[in-house]
Structures are given as structure tokens and as C-alpha cells.
Amino acid sequence: MSKILILGAGISGHVAASHLRRKLSKEHEVVVVSPNSNYQWIPSNIWVGIGRMKSKEILFPLAPLYKKKGIGYKQAKAISFFPEGDKNQPKPYVLSEYVAGDKKGQQEKITYDYLINATGPKLNFEATEGLIPGENRTYSVCTYSHADHAWHGLKALIDEMKTGKKVKILIGTGHGSSTCQGAAFEYILNVEQELRRHKVREMAEITWISNEHKLGDFGMDGMLLSYGSMTLKSYEMVEMIFEDRGIKWILGAGVNKIEDGIAHYENLEGSYKTETYDFAMLIPAFSGHGFKAFDKNENDITEKLFKGFMIVDADYTPKPYEEWSVKDWPETYQNPTYQNIFAPGIAFAPPHAISKPRKSKNGTVISPAPPRTGMPSGITAKLVADNIIDTIKSGKESLSHKGSLGNMGAACIASAGYGLTQGSGVSITTYPIVPDYEKYPNTQGRKLGKTFGEIGLAGHWLKLALHYAFIYKAKMRPFWWLIPE
Image 1 (cartoon, helix red, strand yellow):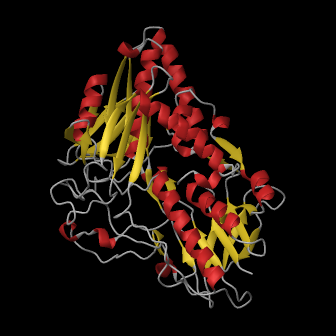
Image 2 (cartoon, helix red, strand yellow; image 1 turned 180 degrees about the horizontal axis):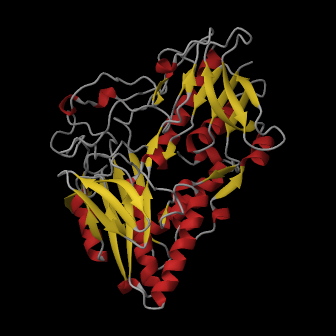
């Protein structure tokens, strides 16, 4: 009998738990530890943030589902890792603390034979002074509760605009190394359309602020893509969209301080500037959770497991941008020191950024961290689960399932406005996610035809269909496994 412990119940953790439970016999134990009581479909948070969906439509409670499917569940948070056990507990374990229920505040050593770290990122709001969701007129759509709050703030602003007040709206990244520009991109387009729907668009100045050096970088070094019969650079497509909607932009901006209605930032030229606003949604920096690790004698071995995020089979050798390669990126998401530990999704430490690193003339890093979104998170979680399943069934280590962001594609359907007849979506597929300049030297490291963009109502229908399909899949309804990651 084997026990697989999964930390986190987001896309990666939930996908791994689902496949493990379906493919392993009941003699094997699958246990999920997560501080969250609900599963949430994060890509639909932006619709909650404009009031077009209720948060209850994008989430469901984990405990009843896991009980029904035979998956153990503990509402707790991981504190520290003991991959060799200790003097009193010979099996490897994770020290966790319950966050709810009768056991709230109690700590427990949760043992395992295999560990999947799917804890994702910490939303590091404190890295930017004053960037606190709901304070200083700033909001977030990173969680469903944040998105609920953002809609209340936006609705109040729309009500003021209907009385004749002119306002400034600022949306983008809230730190020099923030990632997830895609979520902010979706939100700014949805907010702009909602203002038109409420007939107050002329009352608002809408500005995009980002640490990207060019529009459409998205932390992926930009893209050369097929667009109908044309070939466009991603910045040209985003410029076209923003100009069409009257959205201004500020680029190369590292926001470093927020005051009530004022965003302070440094640009790549080394100048310090401010931008005023009445409503802002700024994506924070992401970071690891600050976990510690100890050997069986309780000596600190954190550096063997973590480099901010968890260390996996990547090449972490420091090298200049010109020497970066798709070969640097992991394929199995296995920790090299403790081979029964894996970290798919956003929990693994990337070997480096994807976009060319940039600093201001003052030496401040103003450059997007690498994005790792829903589709790759699900794919990497499934391949980790499949390797563990094969290893358990064969009795010997199997790592036949592999997938690098350097040979993996991703499809992103960015909502550009909600509505069955008036909605819009920006559909972008990228192959590979990490550009391969050796294989595709003349097309910015990506394969044209597999890297393309489209804009239109069909994109909205597709994103809405995916919302319902992936909620169905996450609830493990009949034949859920036929829906790809």
C-alpha cells in the first residue's frame, strides 16, 4: 500500500488527486491537504470582478466531493518538510497546521510515500508598500473573495459616474517582477466593456500599467503569431485592441508604493513617477511560501528542496540570457535529492525567466516573472500523477511521462467582454510556451500555425464553454477524464 500526499487543491493539486484516485486501487491512499475549503475555477474570477458571475458559480466545497470519491482531505496548511522523517517518526512527513474545525491550530505530522507539492504561489502583496486588496482604492481578482470585493468597488464607481463624475481607472501589474499579465489584460478589457454597457464609458480614462517593456510580452518574450492571413507581433495585436477601445498604456513600470489613489512607480529609464486613479486592480508579485525543510536529525536542508519555489529537474546554473535554452526547463518535476517528491504547476522553481531580464538605470528589476497558467498546470499535474501510478503498479521507478514548457503548447482564451451577443474573446495559442530559438530561429522561437491569435464573439463562447466544461471535470462527473487538461 502507498500513500500519496498532495499539498494544495488548486488546478494542479486537484487534477493530480483526481487521476490518482481514478487509476489506483482503494488499497492506496490519496490525501489532499489544503487551507482552502473550496475549489475555485480561477480563470472565471474576472467575470466575478465585473458582476457578471456570482462567486458561487465558480466554486464548490471540497470536503463532500473528496469524501464521495474516497480522497482524504485535511483543511490545513503545510508548515515544514521532513523528507527523511525524524528521530520519532521514521517515515517522511510534512508538518501541517489545521486552519478550521475542531482541530484549528493543532499541528500534525502527515506521512507519505509520495509527495506532490501543488501549493502554487504566495500572493505577495506586501512586496509593494500599500498594495492591500480593498484598501487605498486598490483591488485584486486573484481569488473569488478578492473578485467579489472588486465588483463592489467597481459598481460603486459606476454609480458615481452615472451622477456625472469623471474617473481614472488603472489596471495592470503592481510590482516590478509581477507575472500574470494575462489576468489583468482580461480584466481591463472586461471593465472597459462594462462601462460601455452601463453607458458611462466617456466618463472614464482607462490606463494599463505594466512591467512589460512592450505590450503583449505577457512574460513570454512576446510572440510572432498568425492572425488570419497576416503575421503579427503580439505587441501589434494588443496595441490594436487597446487603441480600438481607447485604453492608454504605461510600460516598463515597476510599481513600488501605493497611497490612496496614487501609484508610485519607477520606469526603465530610472525616473520615479506617479499615476493617480479612482479605482485600481493591480496584480501582486508571486513568491514561494517560505517553507523550511529538515533532515532526520532536524538540520536545516531547505536549500535541497527550495529555491523560493521547489527545486525540480531543471538546470539552475546561472547563465546570461543569450545562453538560455528550452533544455533548461524541467520535464518530470521531480526533486533531484528526494525522488519521491514532485512539484507541478506553479509550485516548481523555474530555471530563469522567459522574457529577457531588464533593469532600470537604477538597477531595479522591472521585468515579468515567467507565467505558468492553468493549462500547463493541469498537464504537468497529470504527468506527475501518471508517473507515480506507473511506479506503484510496476514496483520500480518510472518517469516515462514527460512534458517541458519548452515542448508544450498552451491555449489561452482571454475574455474581452461578457455577453452571448456582445461578448468578445482574444484567443491565443502558443507553441512552445518557452521559445525554442534553435528550432524556430526565424519566428521568434515559436511555430507559426500553432501560435496564432483571433479576436471575436466566438472567443467568448469558447471561454464560457470551457468554464462549464472544467467545472464539470473538477466535480468528477461521469467521464470527466475525457475532457483534456
